[in-house]
Amino acid sequence: MTTAPDSGLNLLEVRDLKGGYNEVQILWGIELEVKSGEILAIVGSNGVGKTTFLRMLSGVLPCQSGTITFEGEALDGIGPDGVVARGISHVPEGRRLFASMSVEENLLMGAYVRNLTDQELSVDLDRVYGFFPQLAERRGQLAGSMSGGEQQMCAIGRGLMARPKLLLIDELSLGLAPRLVEELCGFVKQINEEGVAIILVEQDVLTAFELASRAYVFESGRVVMAGSTDELLENPEVKNAYLGI
Amino acid sequence: MFKPWSKIQWFLMGMGVFALILMPSFSENDVIRKWMDILMIAILATSWNFIGGLTGYPSFAPAAFFGLGAYITAILMNAGFNFFLTLAIGSAFGGVIALLLGIPILRLRGHYFAIATFGVAEFFREMADNLRITGGGDGINLPQIIGGPDYFTRFFYFSMLGVAVLAFLVQYFVTRHRLGYGLVAIRENEDAAAMTGIDTTKYKIIAFVLSSVFPAMAGGVYAYRAAFLEPIDVFDILFSIKAIVMTMLGGVGTVMGPLVGSFLMEYLADYLWSAFTEFHSMLLGIIIVLSVLFLPRGLMHLFQELRLKGWRSLGAILRNNIQRFRV
Image (cartoon, rainbow over all chains, first blue to last red; front, top):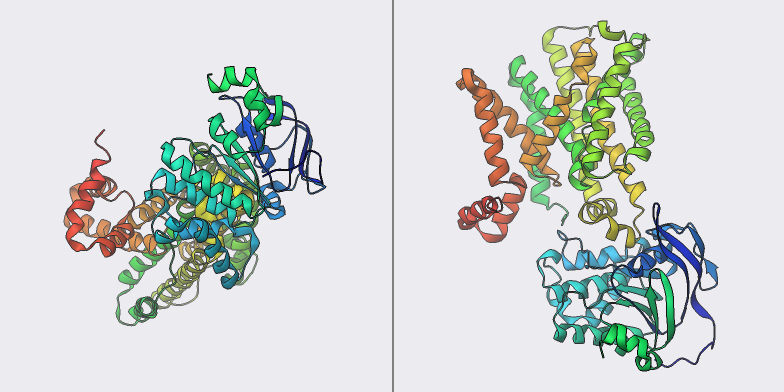
């Protein structure tokens, strides 16, 4: 995706976001924007607050201070269900499927807040099966009994069933074989081409930069660098710290 | 996960209930009493299944709400209220108390939640022991039911049967409704459930309320039948433990599991008691340990697996289950 800088309205704006778990503050004033239709990567090593940031976006974790604005409206105190209803859905780290439910039931859970008729649901299911034909073959199988890659597809599919405008994907590549990661990247691109903006949190910087047009680098709960992925790839600090070149 | 029942399943269930309705017409009072106890345990087990089985929150609160319902019926009947009205008031009151208690304790997870619910039963027992309105440790008398033993045995039996059928139907519809899926999602992964937009706190409270109203009703029936209540009798933690054990043996998170578990275990316990009077408790203990080892998810899950894989795989399934313990 190519988006000219500062063109149009930001889909998501995060200003001076602080927060963490009880007394342990993890995020120290995050500033970030997402433009509609783009893929944005957040990279950084373990424990810098990437997952915490996503959890605060999706409302699972309350913020201490700062503002999150989505489509011009604040996302304060509306809870995770409110956030999903507004159009942000979260594909959590480690998939977290509902293991004793079938693939299709997991997908249906993704549409839980939308209260659709069976007909509308089957339209949305077909859309997800269109992205992931493997899931269609396994729709009746228990989600917990699938391979890691299929589980990741199911988790993304579950996220899509909420018809999000912004999809948060936490660690797309975690624990998966390179060939599978490549395949999943293809799916993510396809989803993005349908107009869904994506925030991709990744430890695998190369994979993330390949997909995303812009990226933020997190360090100790702060944004230390931001810019287009092409620029960042040339940055000596990034090369040194994250690409091992 | 939960498929709607077929006509055959409903027919069989209907036959079962019909048999339970006809049974008192040609049975002795002691058989009817036995079945009344089974139904009572089945109510407690079915109720526990809402919070413990479907939602995955191990509650020890059934005894608390059983006792609460029993005392409400006792107090209100002494004030001249109609028996059935006291059941309705008792269960409504139990539901409200569960709602108020659920707000703080459902923030806890796992063992901490279990301990907190354990505390609830103890707290209620202490209250009943010390309040004037409950008669304190001396207990409380209820008005005697008018009529002979044949009449009142049947009266209480049918009251218990009514509550059991109600509890079962509510459970059936909850599990086939989106609410049930929401509860199971919480059990499987509470974080992911929240991320799909389920208001987890609200759902857990609903499950806790549902798991409290029916024990309160059963407690009311128990109270009128016993005609005399002592705190230690009705706030007995054994009620909670039985509810849990029966559900675990029958099949956690299935609608039939709590019923099957209650029927089988109560009959088994009875049989062992009459056949091996000296060491029936030990035998029952051994059977419970063995079934936990071989059937960790209960009988209903075994049936489901057998239906999927065929009866020949019985040995393989049991071996598989036991192997999980070989580290």
